[in-house]
Image (cartoon, rainbow, N blue to C red; front, side):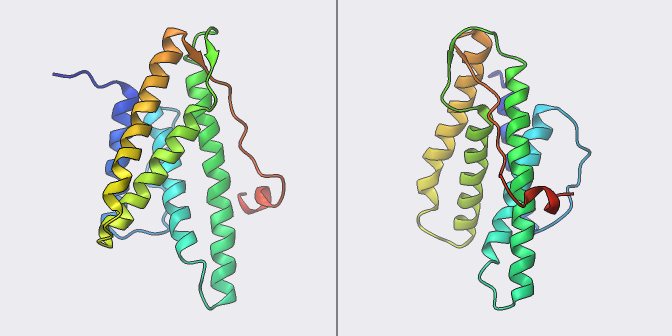
Length: 177
């Protein structure tokens, strides 16, 4: 039996959650689990904000000004939380790394963010029978492996990351309170 570490399990469980949300045709919805600082909770919450933001973006070209405003403000709010959870994921791994090693050019939060976004694109293209969907699988696999490799390097002292600050300069704070 192959050993699956906490990160790999969290990534796989997050994809299953995203599949469930998609299969239930959810678009904007309340997060259905208690928040905590476990790795799975942080990754799943990042995926939740990416998932909701995807659907806000899809509705942006609506004829109604009120709908466009709703979409814009909702997307800004989810993007703010997306940034916050990328930082939380970076913090999680900074607290586990050694103080040695070369700095990696990006944090774990950014890698996992791209992983969940590429998977979102994959499940939507698949459901639309778009022939390009399988082209995303190597990218998704690459990002999963990049995160698992970076985790090993952080723990072994080969690499380290900083907490990459992810914030916008205007207009976001009021929307997210």
